[in-house]
Length: 322
Image (cartoon, rainbow, N blue to C red; front, side):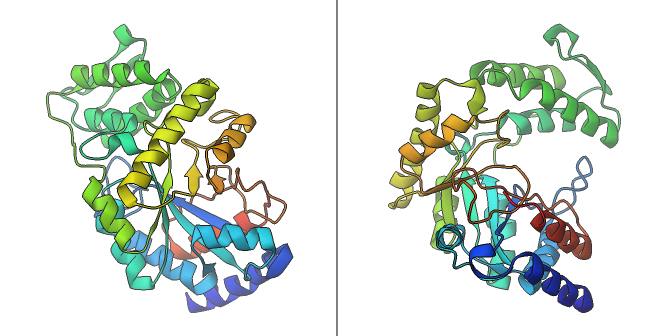
């Protein structure tokens, strides 16, 4: 692995030199699990995350996102610059990810959907947990217009979850919540987990550990489906809650879902700027350059569990500037 890291470091230095021609790699995570999930075996575990961060540290110069954005604009980034980010606000960000980050002396920025703190549950997790605990091997959602699904195996559950989430994700906010609540009622008799997201106390502990906190709206809507007034309410309410809770300005924002054009619109980046943020990140892959729009910075999702493949994928991502 040491030889791979040395080769990767040379390649990364070529693809991302210091200064005005630097490329900034921003990694995006969501959850770090204590152990492998049989439904989603590719989800990052603490062991996988530890190996990935070890390789990232060996190859890249990892910076806090706020510092990296400033240095990107000024043309003063070091070679092989990278940042680590997390979306949504899962409790395992504190219990599993933070110890790994501290072990390696790394910094990360955590973007929080504030409505789900303190016992809330995101719509996607309602679907996942309902199907995880489905009472039958077949889930008939024809009455809801969501088809009939085989859920008799872990693979079948995963396929059903993905198909259903693709159908409900873009529903209007209230309809989306009502739909997944009805799905859960039809699927399972088991009370669904209400401790997946952080509490306010856990959020404060994460911040006290030196991690940055960013905005991610309140209810994680698809902003492209909302009018400007609703977009402003969602973003500003989340920002105000975080600032009141943490006692400092929240300067960074992540678009929910984050694909430009389908999940948020170009004009909404101007609203984010107007609401007082200094920069924002999307989920468009690629690396940021000095010419990038700092309110639409790209991010890379590191799916590869194998550390060598993880680094090779990160190098491939560096080849695509934004």
